[in-house]
Image 1 (cartoon, one colour):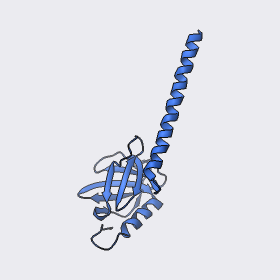
Image 2 (cartoon, rainbow, N blue to C red):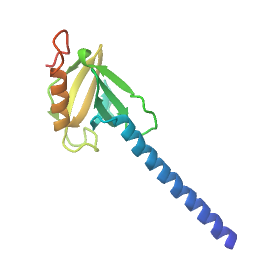
Image 3 (tube, rainbow, N blue to C red):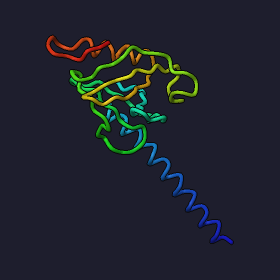
Image 4 (cartoon, rainbow, N blue to C red):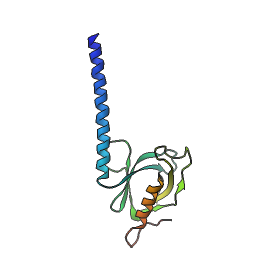
Length: 145
């Protein structure tokens, strides 16, 4: 019987250690992705898809980068150039239509190099994205409609 109790304690200890390690990796990943820049929650919906993929969006040097919420990769899953990104006006996301992780999300329809997709983000994040797009240097830039 003492061997069984010891085995259970070891298994529980390993599980707790694995969960703690996963949480530390996720916090470290989020900090590494941010690198001093602001990250905000953003969900992506591919053209014609019904589901949303939750993640982080970061506005960088002329690009918008989207990172999935889970995973350990430090590389963005999607990268959209500012000059080629067209966004629509925001509209509220109906209950049950959008991602549950973003409270009071707004949806924008986007187009980048012939690819259509949707983004769901908070209203302040949408304002920041729109301002960032409109503040592009003079020249051929993205059209914001």
